[in-house]
Amino acid sequence: MLRWLAVAIGAVLPFAAVAALLALLWRKALRPRLPRRTEPQPQPQVRTRQQAQAGTSPAERD
Image (cartoon, rainbow, N blue to C red; front, side, top):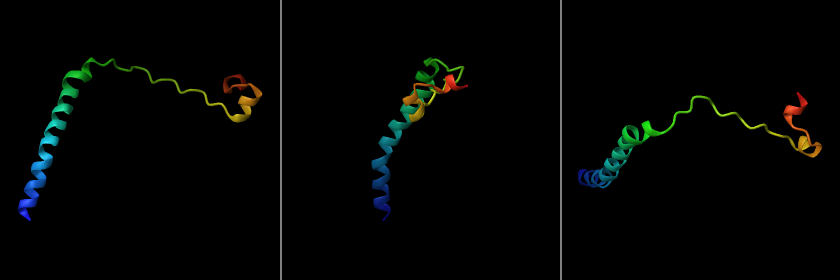
């Protein structure tokens, strides 16, 4: 039983180490270079089927 547990840990360990290195690389090297979003992106106006058929948008109604 202990042997199978060691085999399972030994099989997963290299993948876990690579994932940890990629996460560290992302946080320390790549993430600071990405531009920061200072303002939230505006949500698109959703048109209903009736508005689409009538040719009006939600902004025109208000």
